[in-house]
Image 1 (cartoon, rainbow, N blue to C red):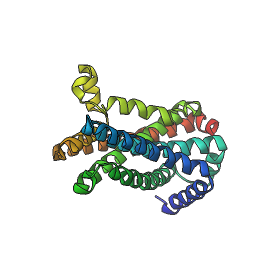
Image 2 (cartoon, helix red, strand yellow):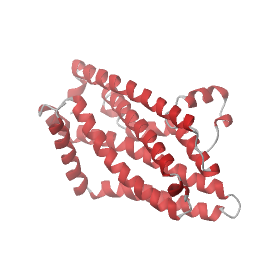
Image 3 (spheres, one colour):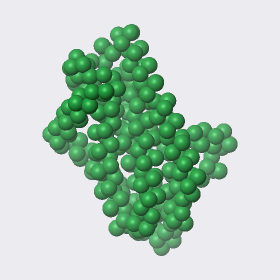
Amino acid sequence: MRWYKVKALMARDLKIYKRSKWKIVDSLYFPVTTVIMWGLFAIYSREFAMEAGLMVLVVNVFWSFSYLSQSITNHSMNEDSYSGSLKQLLISGISEFEYILARIFSSTITSLLIMCVMLTVSFFFGFVTLVQTPGLIIAMIGITLISSIALSVMIAALIIFLGKAYGFLAWTLLQAFILLSAPFFPLKILPQVVQVIALGMPYTRVFMGVRGLVETGIVSNSLLLEGLLVSVIYVLISYPLYKMAFGRARRTGELVRMM
């Protein structure tokens, strides 16, 4: 592992990010305004369903965080592919692991900063549990981040395997994972077969924990451990898939077509 190459790519990403005003707007504007909208709904719903409104607010905070943690990595890869900079990066000698690791670090820093902003905004809309149980919040943030990193690597593998025409997976595939993770409702609402699938989704326990935190202020350690275990399994699966896809793309010439 050559950390200087990872740091160099991260520094490049930071410079591009600073100069691309639309990236700052896209990363910050939509998540924060979403939290504000649902925060106002939470205030309004206090009259008839206080917990429901607050639950929707907090679920949306974690939903936005998971999207940012995953999509920033994959969007950066798509930009490299379409701009031609991927070729320059690979010619520089950076390995596929160093490349994806730098992208993961950059997206992690950005998404965590925005998560802090979203949580601060949600506190002023009534999410006081944030300061009462910070350990639980940090644990759920960690599980969400690990899951999103694993998914970003898997999606990167799919795009490399299928070709850059499938770059749309960077912002579409997560939606299916969120849907199957039952964000706003208990698993029992889903059909029996889908319930089994949902138990294997990386965000299911996070959303269960968020709902429990809003309703009772308690999240069981067993739920957090299950969520961590599932997220780690996704991580262990993701890198071999990425490495295999990268190796195949080199052999078949698909990597050249992505440049």
